[in-house]
Amino acid sequence: MVMLSYKDSKGKDAKDSVLVKDGKFSISGTTAFACKAYLSLEPLKKDSSQLRRQADFKDFYLEKGKYKVEGIDSMATASITGTQAQTDYNQYNAKLGALLAQFKEITQRFSKVYYAKVKDTVEIKKIQAEARPVHAKIEAALDSFIFSHPDSYVSLDLISENKTAVIDPVTFDPYYKVLSPRVLGSFTGQKLTAKYDKAKQISIGKVVDFTQTDDKGNEFKLSSLKGKYVLVDFWASWCVPCRAENPHLLKAYNQLKAKGFEIVGISLDETKAAWMNAVKHDGMPWIQVSDLKGFKSEIAVKYGISAIPQNFLVNPEGVIVAKNLRGEDVDQKIATFIK
Image (cartoon, rainbow, N blue to C red; front, side):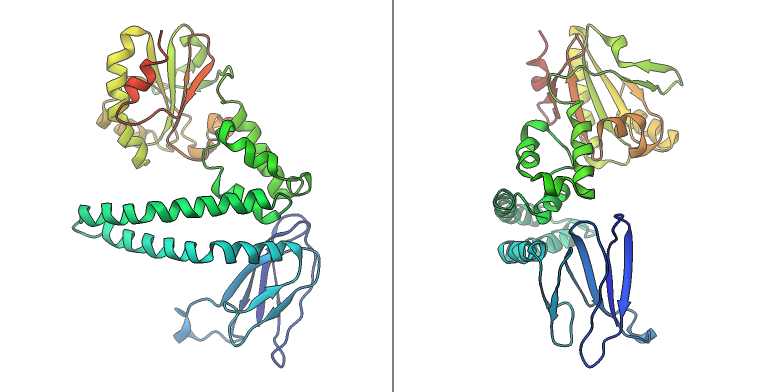
């Protein structure tokens, strides 16, 4: 049996199946825009002894048009050809396939060493050093494909999947502007536009204000700190990189608070106990706010925050003057803005 998993004409997840007869199958349907889809070859009868067998599937780009699937005994090794979107995807795989496979092998070795009971820090650094040039090559090849395929749904997905964790309009704008109106009109394109519009609200030069409940249950308004430099920091107790930044932020806070500097921590936790325990453990004396809704927090949704840590620095007039300041020298970075 062949199973097709795809997005229907309304952008909803859909599935269809067809029997394989004499080594052939035919399947048809409707979809609105080109989208990533999956074809899998599955046995008609489930064999309990084969439950752990590796799934036999192939991903491809499905859109209006005719396709040809050719293979021998396996869907995973089959070739799928047809429309322009699939031609683009085949070109992408030819361009990056070997690099992605190489990087996957490196990350598997890294995970094995990193999560071992006894960490070999020398080997960890060695693997990280090995991974950097490969990652750089992947990024360069990715950009090369995107900018040479502006009217491709594949480029749209690559941007959505690889360039939107933290959107800085300065660096993101070239990726967004290269995409054609046709692909931006798709369901994924509309979501990308909406996310970018949210991110623009907290770009450098924008005036920002919000209201949120603090750790004592009182309403806090960012503009109540007008006249001060304020670092607005998105974090959570479960976020390891966020927690790693807290000692650096504490150093900056202690050095600069007398010069009119303040920090407002916006926790994306979902339980007050976890939030408060982290505040106490890390010794954070600055203002803390949260509505305990995680990434569904009103502020996170408003500004399109989907990855942390993130922060922005506002000046005494409430204007954003810097973004994503972090590291051991964050105190020096912040100090350059305080006059």
